[in-house]
Structure formats: C-alpha cells, structure tokens
Length: 378
Image (cartoon, rainbow, N blue to C red):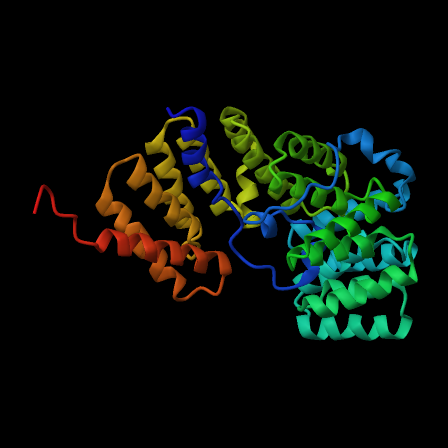
C-alpha cells in the first residue's frame, strides 16, 4: 500500500474522477444543491464548519414544514417514489394552496407534473406566464427553476431577490447559477446572504458543504454534510436521490481525508435500492477508488468493470480501469484498450467531462504509440 505524498497523488488519480457524468438540463438542480457541478473546480469556502447547531431553531425557520402539512407531504413523496405522480400531484396542489409560499412543496409539485408526463416546454411556458402575471418572488423562482439558460434564470432570480429581500430562495438560486457559470465570488456572496436570511435553509447548507469540499476543507465539509443529512432525514420535500448523492459526496470527502475504511463502510451501508436513483455507476466508481486506496487493485478493477456496465456511456469507469491496469495491475495492453474505449465513447457524448477525459485518452494513446527511445550509444 502506498503512503505519504506519493500515495495521496496516486489515490487522487482515481478518486478525484468520481463524479456525476450527466449534465443537468435545467436549472431545477438548484433546489438540490448538487455537488457534481463543482467536482473539477476549486472554490473559496464560505465559512467555518457548520454543524447542526449552526442551523439554529429549525422549527422557526421560514422554510420549516409545519406539523399539520408533514403527513400529507410524506404521503405525496411516497406516491412519487411508488410511481404514482397523479396522486402526488393532487395532494401537492392541495398543500400548495394551504402553504403558497413553501417553495419546497412547489418544487415537489413541479416534479410530479414532469413525472406525470407534462411536456417540459409547455410546463416552462405556463410557469413563465404565471411569473409575468404575478411578478412576485415565489413565482419568479419557480419559473427560473425550469429555465434552460443561465442568463434567463439569473434575471428572474435577481428580480425575485428584489421583490422579497427576506426570502432565502432567490439568493440560493443565484448562488447556484453563478457557481455553475464559474462566477465564484458572486456565488459566495449570494450564498452568504441566503444563510443570513435563513440559517436552516437546507439547499443552501447542502451547497455550502459542496463548496467546502471543493476547496479541500474536508473536515469542515464532512461536518457540513453530516449536519445536512441529519437535518433533512425527516423532510419529505428532500428528494431521496439527493440524500443518496450526499452520502456519496460524503464518502468521497472521507476518502480524500485518508479514511478509506469509513468511506467503504458508508458505501456498504447504502441500500441496493439506492442504485435505482441513477447513481449505480458513481457508487461503484467510488468503491473502486476506495478499494484501490486500501491496496486491493483487483477488487477495485472489478468494481470499475461493474461501474462501466451500469453506465456504459460514461467515461469515468473506463478511465479508472485504464489507470488501474497501467499503474497497479501492470497490464499495458488492457490499459490501452480502456483508453481507446474512452476515446470512442466521447465521439457520441455531448458531456463536457467525457470530452475532457477523451482529450486525456488521446494524449496517453499518442504517447503509447511513440516508438521506444533507442538504447545505448549511437
């Protein structure tokens, strides 16, 4: 097993590849604060470690879900998970009428509308028309959530923040959009304002944890992710897939901290049903990175192979196999074949991360194709 700086560098060559590989088509992701968009970027962390105490009195939060709504919201979430969006939609329409300013419930309603088969373009047009008619913060945020371009989403969110300066959602949405566009300073400023408005705002806390992780502040990130998982576990407005993604993010943080056994235990504790959320490939890639770190290259390679089977269009698992074959299993022919699969897959992929990995594959293959240097004196 490797140790010290060499071990860390070689571990990162596999572990830091672990990220979601599919782009989010709409800015709806800002309701979840996904880590994936930051996994190849470095940001300034937005504050000190934020444990659960930093959330304050969660029951007094403007975004707290009242006990009288909790049961029905839980029933709606169960209906969504059971594949009955029509039932969920009916429940959520009633809940949104009772709590018209609860954007978490409104986001669930949008989710049920999309899952029920409503045309995304028609849904976007409907919410956009409502935002233009009402021109209030809530309607603008919901319309921005369905926007496909950063400029339009940002414009709506800026108007929403102006309409209601005491609403955390517009500031959070702006933080997410600005960070996604690489405007880190602006993102930090908006996130700071969102948390000042509502310290218990769950999406903002999730985004904060992501920024801490990408800044390399792993101890603080672990504290923040753990707090978010604790605070969100009984909130039906939080999509279960977001909690699975946070567990995977936390496992990656633990791996970066050199706590591979803790990461492996976390990954093993995830139920098999979690793969139904579309994260099987990433989970298996994390297992591969963890097993490699623990000095088990054969187990790592097996996990990477299963990851490729789970996500045959993603480059990540193939890159892991190439690195493992090249650096640990000493099989240059298999490494070359894996790099060629990376290159071939990128030809049909529009995903930026896949294209970046294909550039890496091209460089490696060109190096491998160079004739060996002559030996001895001329």
